[in-house]
Image (cartoon, rainbow, N blue to C red; front, top):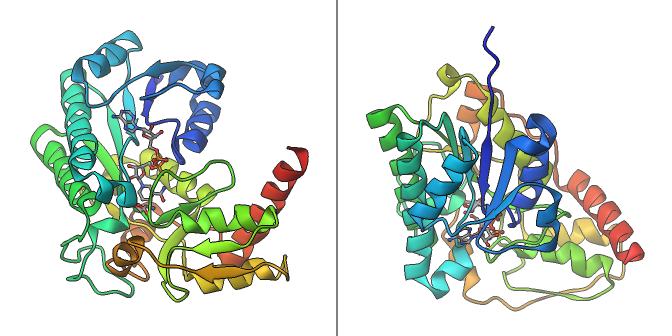
Length: 319
Ligand code: NAD
Ligand code: SER
């Protein structure tokens, strides 16, 4: 029997998801099979193989793929929704041109599988706000969403034209204790836990009733790995799968935290991110993911709050 060898490259490994997904992949595939990479180096990059990579530079990417005989790429590098509105050209360059590099290098060097994260930001005013379906019409209001729609279509194009096995999820806002988010509209839902645990008041940049789809980090990692491990015939959606964990508003997450910290206080001062949030769905229909590769989230708001507070309070106490 032939034993499959996977050499995995994670691009954007220092980010909110990459810093949790990279150790999870090392746990499964072995430390020496997972190469982390990012545009900058940080201290804990010494924990395993690491390369500095600007993913918009095809030659550097190709050299790394050749050096480690890479067979799978997780392409996480991106400029997120809020940062993207501040610099749309950079967002397009990083989000679309780096993906083109990843797809081209994959064809040239026989990469077996590529993971490309999309987002709920692909939806706009043409999609229904509640239980947004898999095949909704996509007219995003942000450059981030526009770049993700382009990315989803590129993923499908490379699959159809070259047979490249690109798989993708439309992540909702991701919430975890391990890492900080990097400039999105859902970032408040991580920050609020840090403020509560450190005894500070929280000033929210969204209105109290702005409901958005969210997911706990463990569920996001579980979904990513399940999708990538599913057999190819199960993957029926080649643009990107809707994915959902829970939906809540700032007021609802505040009340769930207040059960643990009765004196915790919140105030609201919406900024430009309110318009971004208003253009996104309130909840997502992820039945295609459930039917095709058995997706099932494990965390609701109550369970997530319990774990976030327990993990963060240990960290703040030992600091
Ligand atoms: P992040 O901003 O925390 O991390 C992105 C990483 O990419 C950073 O470490 C950054 O240094 C790196 N990077 C930026 N430009 C680069 C370049 N040119 N070359 C190489 N690396 C570069 O983002 P994240 O939250 O970890 O998101 C990862 C992916 O998931 C992104 O594609 C994002 O759009 C998608 N996503 C995230 C969320 C979320 O809530 N976190 C939701 C939906 C989709
Ligand atoms: N969490 C991301 C953002 O807010 C959604 O893609 O940008």
